[in-house]
Length: 245
Image 1 (cartoon, rainbow, N blue to C red):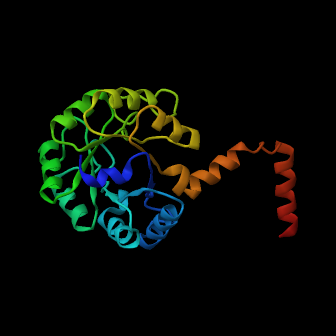
Image 2: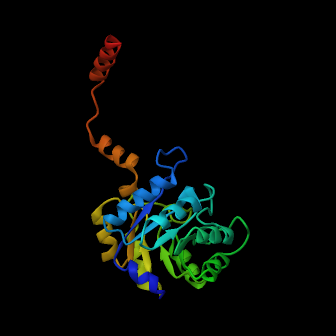
Image 3: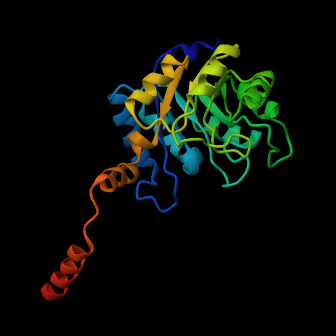
């Protein structure tokens, strides 16, 4: 096992990314500050890049003293998480210690293989993390040389349909019992008990993103928990607004 992975054992990895181009936090400095706050709270590592790509990875790598798992989301369909060896090298240049790569068996935009992308990470002396959706993906990723496997894409690929909207603890449990490499739990870990359950299921570490670093999502959770205003109250509010004008 790569020595760097020892620093992740049993730890919380915080994913610091935005998911929309119009997100008010889509700024490398904002991402770096968010990452710093997560590390102050006890994050063992930061997963970052996303649609911000190397710029976000570079800013966060300079701001924190924990391992940085870098990725680059280029596109919106098919394989788009660090999809080619070129993306691997650019994320590596930005300062990542671990490169997260789409580890599914789907075709890649440049026609090359997952093994090529993993080899690119290894050529730079870095750890290759394969983001998978199924057991078959995970087995193929390990055969291709992945150092660690993450359940990131469970529920997000055609052959891994999402069941109840929660994390896929069954996949974590299965992979942890079968694979010779560490298994990181990721995907829809929205509560502290979800994270604890992942470790209990055999996860080496657990990634939490949206529930920690997405203020818009968090605000929506609280707002949606409030009772809806009766229609009559909405009418009164509208009348009051017109009167004030």
